[in-house]
Image 1 (spheres, rainbow, N blue to C red):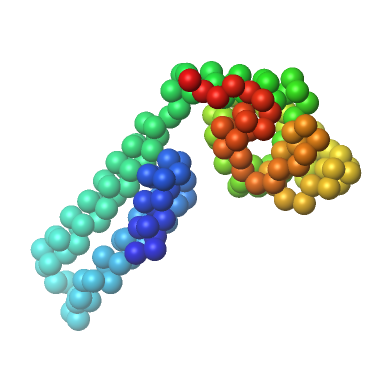
Image 2: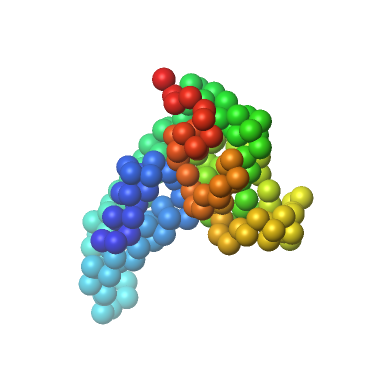
Length: 175
């Protein structure tokens, strides 16, 4: 039940896809269905008894594929992408900075909000093992969690919606 709820939140509230979460959900459903079927005492029983189990597993896998495709088809529109790119370029122009770590799932979520425009973000890698890392700057700025945004000299921790970043940086709201 919890796994079903989390997949619902992922698909319809966050509108995001997590391949591992969907696979995990499928495995939980498959295990649940296998546990519902009585275990045969004798080997060699006819496979007809497992017909419904097979259909249920196939239906579950089909449902996973449909949910994955529904989430994947909800990619941002071109206007949303151009807005995200404009916002990313604006953040760079005004000297805003996103501090993060390559392994941080919240940083990945923040970049996902920008889609393809994430490459325009003013990003500083705080983990010394990351590419082009600058852990000293992160320490000097007092970054304690990721992502942390610095906009106009003020620090904002956690994932920020694009609308919030636009408001904080003085970028016009989307039309």
